Amino acid sequence: MPVVCRKDRLPHFRDVISQGKTRERLLCLLMAVAMASFAPKLPAQMTNAATAASGGGSAGLPPTAAAAMGGSGETRVFPLAQLKRGMKGVAYTVFEGVNPEPMQVEILGVLKDSLGPGRDMILARLYGAKPEFTGVVAGMSGSPVYIDGKLVGALSYRIGQFSKEPIAGITPIEQMLEVRDESVQPAAARERTSGGPAEVSVPAANGGLGVEMQAMETPLVFSGFSPETVERFGDRFRAMGMTPVAGLGGADSAAVQPEPLVPGSAVSAVLVRGDLSVAGTCTVTYVDAKRLLACGHPITQYGPVDMPMTKAAVVATLPSPLNAFKIVNTTETVGAFTEDRASAIMGQFGTKARMIPVAVEVVSPATAGMAAKDKTYHFEVLDNRQLTPSAMLVSVYQSLQGTNSAAAEMSYRLSGDMSVRGLADVKMSGIVAQNELNPAAINAALFVNERFSRVYGNPLDQPVITGLKLKVEGIPERRTATMESARLSTLEAKPGDTIEAEATLRPYQSDSKLVHLKVRIPDDMAPGPVRVLVSDGATVDRLLGPTGSARRAEGLADAIDQMNRLHPNDRIYVTLLSREAQAVLEGQTLPGVPLSMANVLAPLKDSQRMNLNGESVVEAASTDAGYAVSGSQVLHLTIR
Image (cartoon, rainbow, N blue to C red):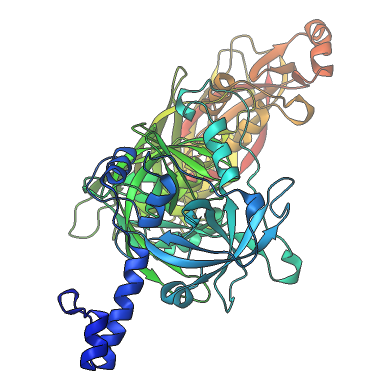
């Protein structure tokens, strides 16, 4: 029968001895003594210091954390050089709720240069009923470790998947404080540069033996997403050391959490918020009046970042020998994470992260006896060249899959704009349908992902994306067609004449369809034979774009202009190919270049700034096909 101890009935030791009390009451006494040893009365000034440091509230620091910070609120550091095997300490993390709970820690040793040159790691064993039951848990990274009231570092690494003991790696606090001391401004306030993200690095050792020391996973909670969506795109986030989970957690930015953030509290970094939510959670290691340090390892190691920082409540901790993790609800925003470095992530209180507002309007197709339905999803996505394309991909896909009309045999008509500060909007249009590899919803999300990747991947300029508006209309069939044949109404024509072209399309599992186009011959078209290309938009794009050695780095303005000149895939195009030279110079097409001018431009070709072709491409006509068209036909025409 379990022992139940009530505070009002805890005995004095002399009563137990003199009156011969029961074994149960003696156990209660021993438990009371143990609790008292770990819970000394907290000075009032320490509670005030903790409250001021983390956004208000009435709760104070955990007892050992308060002792580590001293009466003045300054954290005292346990030097790495003085650490010895066998030393005992205590770590704090949240297993349930918002209040950190203690775990006993025994130091096993220091692994020199384990995480890289000059980056040591402390190896420790955890004791206590909860850590011995749950093991090392995803979301525990950042849990502060103290010895003699001094901060040693943060639990941050684990060994393998099925360890029989909760053995963990600790990032020394000296390395984490370097992130605080070397940081400058938030990412949003820094001068934008063309540099890309640092290479993602999650340190590991002995991977070839099947046993490795790796960073504790950061549970990435997808709220509003189906398990199928998270499973389909989860590998993109697992590659960055995050553990994507669907539905096991939530987000309520309007919720008020009065308890302050203290060492051992759960804290979340937000990637997406609104109708859809994605947030990664770890544990606070260090707090002062302006900032905090958490995790003890990188999430992405991007360097300067700009992600909302929120408080979090742990609903439960799920024990599992394969993948133990915390089920978390994110609550109120208290600042922004501004640094994601090798030893820690850093957040600043009161700082506002810049997010990209997104509106996805989904128009479901009309069915028998039911009118078309319109639903708009509103959410915000972080602004980060490494994470945003993937976050946008999974969010757009979920927006399309979140209606009852979603089906495998379906197509979507897309139209929308991506806004970029100081530049033209990036236009998006076309029909996206199922193919042999993916259903239409994935192809639609990949279409948007490709545009974001091209903008963020520009080698010369750093973009500032200010919004995305997307309208997606569902079509309850596979809306694709192949061009079977084409013909002209005449074999000869004069400059200025209008002739007719006819294309035969074969829609998917349907009868052939004829499409007619009026084609006007340019007034300056030179006499002689001309090839007439009747094709899809992709074929025209290949003819007009730079190829091979002519491809070179271009600025963001030129890249957006080139994207906006891409031809939608739901139209048929008629293009005249004349026997005159054509130059493609810095993304601009110059048809009909005289031979003398081509010789003058030859040095530009040698320097890979220009692509020179033997034929000029003249766009003569186009018409809406109503299908995602593929294929081309080449016809011949003589100009008199």
